[in-house]
Length: 266
Image 1 (spheres, rainbow, N blue to C red):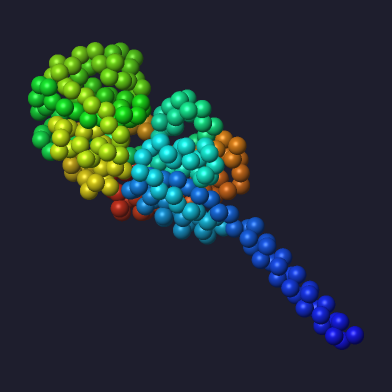
Image 2: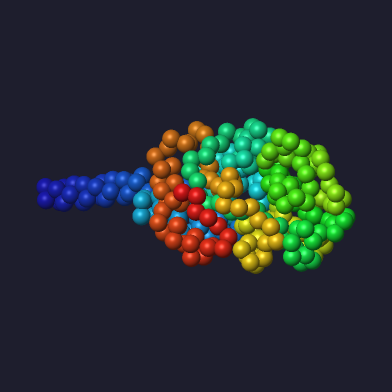
């Protein structure tokens, strides 16, 4: 009888332990989040530490372009991404039929023009070659920056989705070439000026505050965001993810590491 009682006790302890670890496993949520190389990846590392205290484990997946993070999210290979602004997300949804939703903002990363040949846009010579991003929203940003600087004139109402077809006047006969955003820093040796997004500029060792010859101002509407699949936007882990990216720790990290290139948007 004693042997049987002892066996039952051991069985009970084993079952209790199994339930305990099972409960711990359920309490810990693991979320894969896609980011682009550079500042977004570094910010995600800080958010990862904050999220862990809230029972959320982040696995960071880095990409080197702007297309694959949304493709991976829509396919379910990751559960979230953090790297893009709303106009870009909307253009991707319209073009590719993605079912994705924005759930929170992170930082604003201004687009700027960089050059190894001139110090100001108004120094560009007739026939100068200008490289801009080849995706619709960021090419529109670059063209709007040239328009604001008085280098060319866009048609009335062109807006943030402006394309080269919306150029009404090009008195300097600028030759505009469109290049994948991630490759733009490499064009600086070959063109007169390049419009480069902050994350790729910083990754290439450029400082927007120090090196840009023209840059978007603080009123830019291009705050970067966190996106998830629309079917997941009400999941319990989503507020935890947003809280981690909008934490005091992230705010302090951005202020210390990226004071000359990023602005907190929350």
